[in-house]
Length: 265
Image (cartoon, rainbow, N blue to C red; front, top):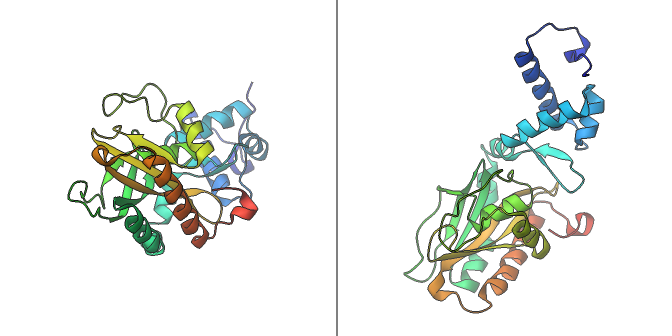
């Protein structure tokens, strides 16, 4: 049986629905204001909640993109929605400015379309782009939101916990593809450090993307290279994957991330 829960130590007779909102709010505030990211078990002890209740509240907040699990230990940090809100005034502009040279280098080296995107609940918002030097493949994506499911950028955010992985079956966005968020695929992304997608977002399009981390180690953005399948030669995805991963690590360093202290990006 669950113990009575009294916000701020005071008795309450609020209805169950309101009490649940109060509890969820306390969980969110604790995640935001605690310097050391808590686990579900830590929240349970700190707030005097049964672990099952804490787990349900965390799950609800995760589904809304308000909190997310930071690493294999299950530590809880602000989710994509709150990170996006925190960057709204100056963060995106600063990120675009810091990423400019990486975008230029990737464009010069690959000749293909280069983007930087950030997670936005259920989607990816594209902030800046360098156009392909070819006539085919020069669509401007800046300011657009693309589905996370089916895109290389989205796979990066799913794999590194910048977006909650969708539950339930997902229909492929293009033929001849497997679901973009299946766990096996995400394990592969974590293992090699970058994600690929071939004709998943739309027919005839391929992309490769790698994560960008901030000083806390959280993935806040991703760099991508994309182009038409008519130019997809043997071994190209692996070659460009290593290239975009290198530039993503350089940008992460500019944002305060230190691989030597936190492990590989």
